[in-house]
Image 1 (spheres, helix red, strand yellow):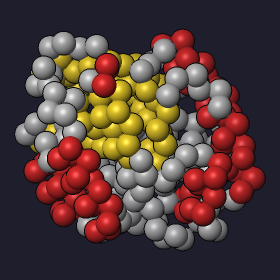
Image 2: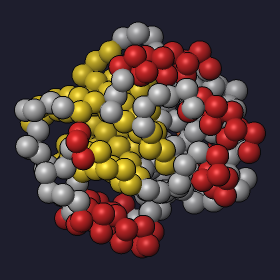
Image 3: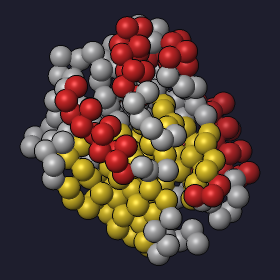
Image 4: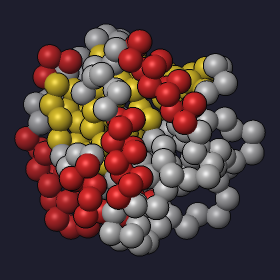
Length: 247
Ligand SMILES: [Fe+2]
Ligand SMILES: [Fe+2]
């Protein structure tokens, strides 16, 4: 039915950035031909214009439609002002009706700060987008910061400052899937009818424990949905498999 690639935390410009891993992931994703590629921020390390130019060069190699939202690293050094110029709008929606997908991208970054915030204006936008979405579409929200804390990531510091309010809008609006990055630790939480999937870093060595660089593939089938992690080391594992209620 629909195939989604979810990549995050490229960190182009960082010492820990691994070009080989990013090219490998892009080649694999192009071979898979997903219906959409969702990129949940930290495209760059410092938000420098030159890093954005370089990151945009990688993103141009992706052959299918993409939706990109900024991360905290992209909002450093006034990078948030150039995100729209070189990458895409900082928040926007994408509807792939034939594939049954409605994707809502949010900008949770705050200039020169690591914590995240969606804010009231975007919260209203989110609520309206969810309310106006066709009922049978799979409603996906993409934002950099996690809304629910992620295990094995140490002391919690960077959860959204308005996480409770955004979580309420997500649940009330009937969103099916929330995609995030930021912690460089893949994880899936399922709460009621909503799944929260965090992707690891696709191309940096900023890793925790034995975790390897990775990205996620989301396979929306007629009856089930699978979230599969693909590691840069060639290994893959299923992060979650659950019933598809959007039928
Ligand atoms: Fe990151
Ligand atoms: Fe981040």
